[in-house]
Amino acid sequence: MALRLRRLAAGALVAAAAGAVRAAARLPRAALSPLQPGVERRVSDANPAPGDTVVVELVPSGFASYLAVEEALGGLEYEGEHTADHAEGTAFVLLEARPFAYRARVPPSVPPGTRLVVRGTYREDPVARHAIPETVLVVRGGPTPVTPTAPSPATATTGTPASPTTPPPVSAEPPAATIYLPAGVRDEPLGP
Image (cartoon, rainbow, N blue to C red; front, side, top):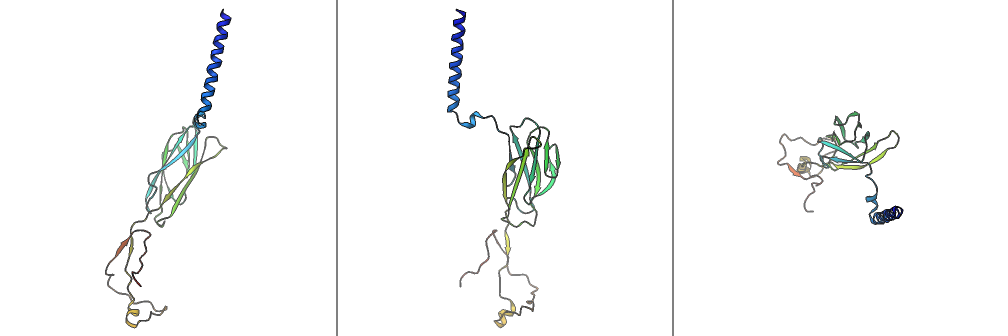
């Protein structure tokens, strides 16, 4: 009788295991695999102005412990402030995988509309490097001052342009008005 009970129990276990395998086969592939290690990059402002400082946060997930991250800032200037355990330039080391941040500045000379692409790699062992998805920042521009163009005094009085070797006369008075246009809008004459 005990042998018969053991066989029944073993048969029930096999049937339950087979049912679990069939159920698992119906799940999406991602649901079967364990959490894949990775690093996500977040920025405080994806459209900074020239001279702005951006906080870049890196959020690791699925790591057991140690993590190293190297960043290529794509034109941003690293300010030296970070919350990692250690840094050498833009190579950061964490003794325990956790979110960390650093500060980078958009150089004041970067023209509006410029795309700054931040790339990076991470590793949890000294040999294998893995890419972090790139982050694109587009530099925004403030209003661009445009001064209305008026004919130079030499052209207005004689009807012919001034000689290229002779500088145009300088007026002591400022222009009548300054008009601010949004970035990317050009001042063009109206009409023929």
